[in-house]
Length: 251
Image 1: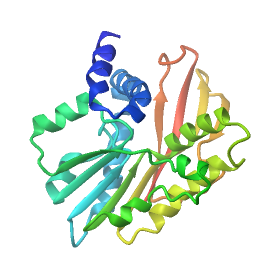
Image 2 (image 1 turned 60 degrees about the horizontal axis):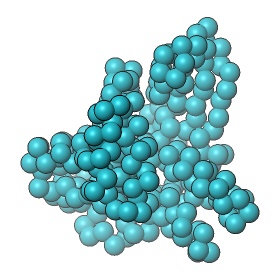
Image 3 (image 1 turned 60 degrees about the vertical axis):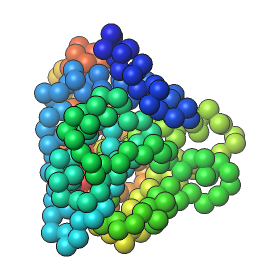
Image 4 (image 1 turned 90 degrees about the vertical axis):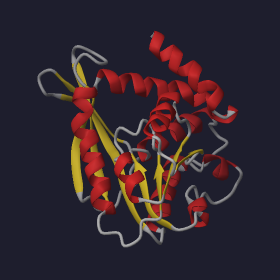
């Protein structure tokens, strides 16, 4: 807990006030990623491989944008930084540990941006959400990655929607998940989507006790790769069950 507290304290002054409430979630993810490093290694490598495959053969490599850059464990950041003139990392929070690692590597072509990519506030204001519309103004954009972000948008929007009961459209979660996918498909440049689409709670005997669709009925594009991510192996949340997510990649 000491490491988590120190990381939180170091990240707080580096984060804009509107996004500071999300630091705790990022620190918790950092902590779990450390505990589950061995179990998550396959998922992280598959994610990196999908992004590499999506970027392969690009004629121009000027600007790349990573949506949901997070801990950078599932992003081939060294190759992107080496291949592209500019790499823009966008997320609600950039932990101090990530910033320090990037600084230590000496990258001069990486930019960090804090941004809510959900589109929730736009929809709440009565507009038609275009959460990725800002990408149209990014100069020389050649590649965009949505990196294990979409289901996180769904979970965050669901929490906000429940808190704002009666004040938002009933289909808010579905609309904003769909808006993210529409934003990607409407890009003029090459793009890659990596997202978990469902989860299952499985006991020691292999029996599934619970399943859920993380995209709330919205269909992702046809997958070029798919795998299982052991998000919570036995012992992480319980000695009696594990949680597995199904992940797809499309480009």
